[in-house]
Length: 117
Image (cartoon, rainbow, N blue to C red; front, side, top):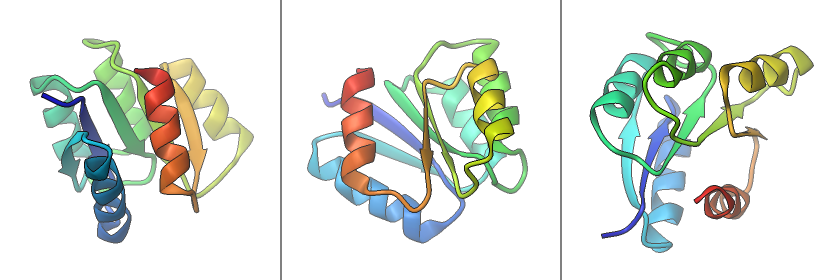
């Protein structure tokens, strides 16, 4: 069984692109389209890595990460369209493993995942 990755991203184009690239690398991929769904899946299911967009409906990525960290230490890669210093700092404080800015190369995301696991 391959390594499991949760992709929490509300932009379907991005989540499907990541899913396609990750599956090519033999990862098992689950997709969550909003923060509430992402939190439920992250807590209820075992994942090796979580890719978490900051701006999502329902709950933002920071809130989801904060809740995950109360229960699990799964590596989390934060995705953001904004590269603001306060977002980076907040992500680090909440326990994010990596921070990737949009637009990104799916190959870079895969490389980061492989580093983390």
